[in-house]
Length: 263
Ligand code: APR
Image (cartoon, rainbow, N blue to C red; front, side, top):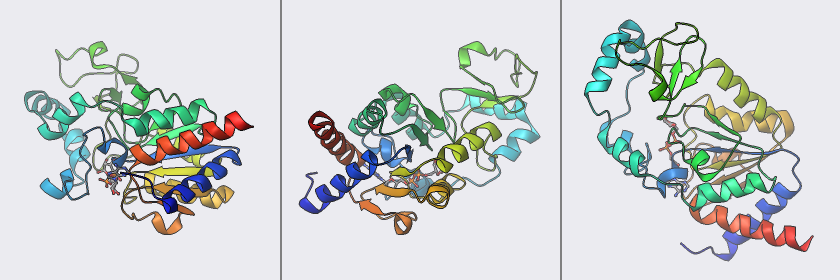
């Protein structure tokens, strides 16, 4: 996709907003990983569009019988289409450009709804995974996170080595509250943001979708959306760039690098 003059002018406005901001952040959704071959959820080919959105009982079922939940999980391939896509996914130009924006000091934190780990693989350092990480496990009591190889699975359900709490996948299940420490960090980051990039999200899942409004109400933050389609957040955004993140973010980095080299 090429960038037309109108879109380029908006990317210039975005560069100016980031250069004049003191605390820039980004919130990303599944659209950020679409160019890495990871399916979105609600788009035309989205997983929930195809198979229906899971009910809110996932977490309740886990709590009722964690042993059965783990036995079922370990014996079946949950959403094989998503697993196959995630296994092979690599960061795309959008992830790499966002990591560069952090390195340049324009972005201080990336809050992601994605569980694919691609932002950290691209080199972003300050990340909050509000919906967890599909490569990790988490204790529901102390909220410590572990890599699977460090948690014995001979006896199910696995128990936390630090507090003897129940261990589950780190990915936040439907009906599960966002871990308190994670939610507090998201709210803290948003309340100090004065410029927020909103990248590839339909903006319909809370509490993530409320974070741009927290930035706007706390600091009058400039909200900038990059998404080929309108979203539920488009109406509150100051700048809406209707383009893929893998196209617009590299163009933004190129502009900022020219500015940085000329200043
Ligand atoms: N670049 C930018 N945005 C894109 C691209 C792209 N290349 N391709 C698609 N999009 C946009 C779509 O237009 C859509 O607005 O990405 C958005 C994806 O929306 P969803 O599929 O709803 O994903 P998301 O907003 O991340 O969903 C939030 O819902 O089910 C839960 O846990 C799941 O974290 C997920 C949450």
